[in-house]
Length: 338
Image 1 (cartoon, rainbow, N blue to C red):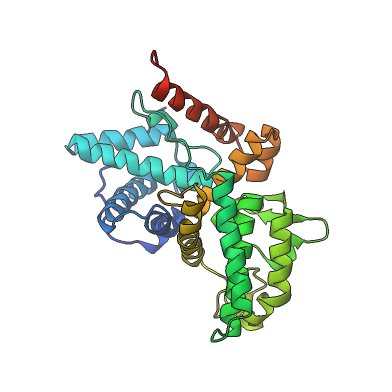
Image 2 (cartoon, rainbow, N blue to C red):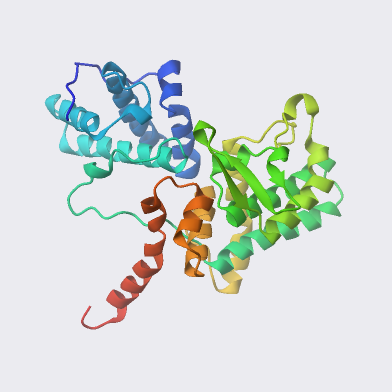
């Protein structure tokens, strides 16, 4: 049932309570550092999301999990009543889709209320995926960098330890398919090295167990033995697994920067190897690649769903379409009757 709405003014400024309840700060980081959008686009998306958040609060939806399709339709109707140009309304719809997709993937929601807002004929965008060779090139480049740093002069002990940390983080992103928030939230106590598992604590205190593969285990042991203790400051580290050079838990922005720089260092080698890495690669690209490579190798869909921490198996099923999409594209490209 569609809810009624009250007249509200679209918000353009910050409201700490509202922004915290609706995860606006995290969404801004995602837009800037993972999507790498321009300042103008980020400002527009935040304007739209804050306006919707105020509208939601006026209609007794205190956080994103209280939002339903009826409220979204009411908001779009409100924008139409205000006389927004079609392009501006379309941008607002796009901003909400992006916002709720972000919350879903980060584990703040179990379902996406914007699914029925899809425009007629709009196709779901398949996730960007690296090939196995591209992933291995990035991981190998990071490992070699850590090896070179260990014997290099002119680097501080903390700088050398950071290269071991970076290699370990990349191995975890691909080897266990973690979300960036889960990666930086790992504590040392969450890792069971002997059994090869990690305990992941998601939103709402939900826990799942994910395997820690051989590459990640080797990188982890090296980091714990020769790296983390050099970075740790007991009064600041709070037991976090991944630390920055100040000894505090690494931030989302710091983790995104590590991934971006690692990819840039690997691009020349990948080009020489004949599998160039094109476009932007984000922490989530490793998660997408983790799922796709497992399913392509014959892994059970339910097992992959459990490892990814998806509440709904339909969210996992998108990865089963990646390979079929490639085949269809090749057919259309080369078949004379396609």
